[in-house]
Length: 343
Length: 268
Image 1 (cartoon, rainbow over the protein chains, first blue to last red):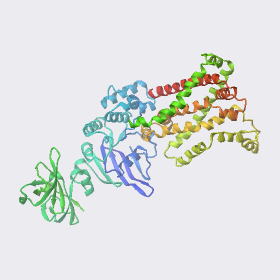
Image 2 (cartoon, chains in turn blue, purple):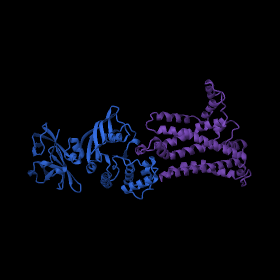
Image 3 (cartoon, one colour):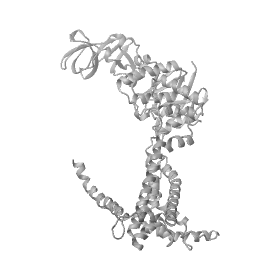
Image 4 (cartoon, one colour):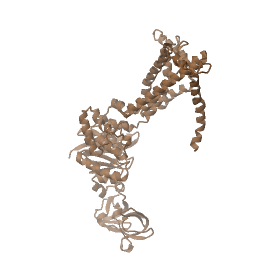
């Protein structure tokens, strides 16, 4: 696949404050790329620079091999779905969607045909004459997507577009967005702070913090092989425990030896990442290598989430085994589920 | 319960100073000196002289409203853009004159526009011939525009600053240049402010008598002056009341016209 967007040494600062460090990122054609990070990490600024609403302090972006930053937003073949939708309140659904084509002075029949096509795509047939204020949040979201797609942009930018929707609708829209992206063959650059959303939809995830890209990879890569404690923590509610390694495939966690499948890095002290669902617990505490006291139990439907205190360290555990606070339980982790990171 | 109680002083106020006077006006307008019912006060108004004064009032109010709008819209727009740094200074510049007495402000124009006034001294200094401005339509127009300009700026400014900037970005994102954004997004969304600006300028301008009295000179007659004259000089409160009612009715019609026009524009 060819690169459609190449971001080179992009830097942004407001006064003395750096918003973006030096960002280098290649985005491929037809890729669903998610920029994931906590609020204030610079992800929205990056998106707004691509859209043209912010200027970069230095660096460059190539779009299809050509310089992008010299063009104002209205001359870029890139469209945006805004977090707040930014629908035109004085226009009905049809006028909102047709806006981009009317600017181009497109033939009326073509506009009508394309609007109908877009309404089909987002499942809003029959809503042509509705005013946008009369629509629900989910419907407004669909109008915003249709409006941005009617121009057939090569790249669609989405700035936390599902943030305002309730959980069920959000899940539905995640699947629909992914299907849309596949069938239209458009590059999606999706900004979110919701790690689950990122894992569900993306071909590639870019994890950002404090204006820097920490890791880029597939959802599986990022989830299973986080490069740093920050990524591990952000991508899932992980246990990140201090550990020591004397040799390959052996790690001491809280003084107890565990087998693992990672080699020893160049330092002795390591971070050990263990996901809550990978922790095995048993009420027969003495049979397991570590034991601790259950501090807190929350029922989550499919499983219980409990906090187990082992000496002075808290472990987060997801398990179907029911326990009570105060109970002493044993803890074990099988070797392929222990992930070692350099400290 | 509590909230309705709080409204009682206002209701009393409105009743004494608005409702009662309107009924007094109606009573005077439809009666003669001896108190018997008549419509003569109204039919008297429909003579070329009085209709001429009415037309002139509407003419002056119309143009002062248009000029106010042409000046106010760009000012309000600049005030509402977030890049504008000296917003508070500019707003203050428009507000400070309103702290001054209205009469004093209007008299100040006498000294600016007079034959030996500031303006003519300045023109002479530049080598231009003097112009006679005071006691002309132009002077009254300048006075009206000056007096009512803030009433046009502030409602437009308020509706412009309510526009979510994301909407503008949305339009740019879809390919709209600044002209198109202005035409299709910003202007239509500021229509409610324009509507209240138009009515807030037109209504007092059409009924004005002080500005026209001072800057138009003694013989200058607008509908407001005519009403004042009937009450204060001629002492015919019956005819004065009838003219007031006619003006009231015309303003109501104008008001309804504007609001329906704006509503249609909004739904289209």
